[in-house]
Length: 136
Image (cartoon, rainbow, N blue to C red):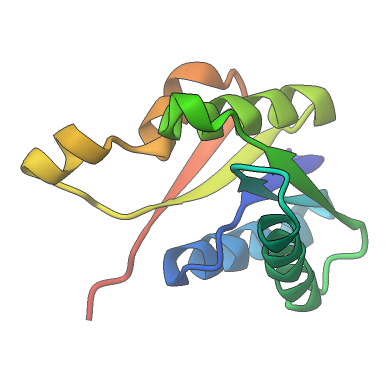
């Protein structure tokens, strides 16, 4: 069913859960996996941290075909810039499925902070799996 799966990571616990789901699906369908991370600037510290996050995520996978991409988001657009960068990567890589974590924000926090996942649902034509944080 799925041949190319993309997962967005940011080093958070929910991103690790999304990565685990993406790995499981990729192994089930023998699909290629692309792990992406967005940075907001091209300074060395951000790029270095982004590469570290991608390498850590890649080291946790046992998928046969896996690649990583460091994306550049337009910071003046805030979360929308991140969503645009991920949506463009989905399109460019021709992903069948995008897997992203969502933090379950509610009320005013969601209103003020928004949600990259929510914006991706509106921007991406591929299937999207939203992974919610596991409550204890």
